[in-house]
Image (cartoon, rainbow, N blue to C red; front, side, top):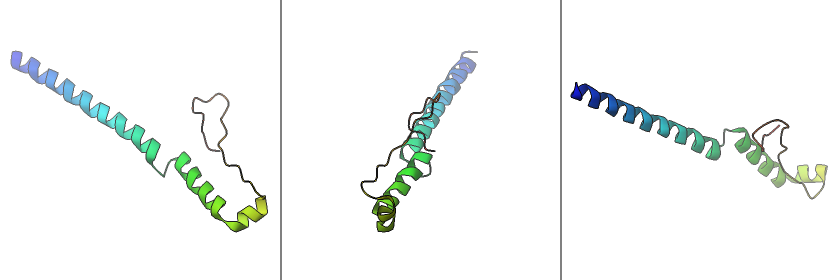
Length: 79
């Protein structure tokens, strides 16, 4: 019985470590990936700011920022 108990406790610990690793991966992927909406927005804004035709069409200075959605917990949502 003690061996079964130890095995179950070990499985619980391993499952906890795997779950923690998954959460850390998701958070780091969201923060540093280019495929998230925020990453795409940053890349597109850099391209627009570097393009002379865009600067001539919009005028200078070009202000780039995100707008918060009302009722959302995420402040920097990209529309």
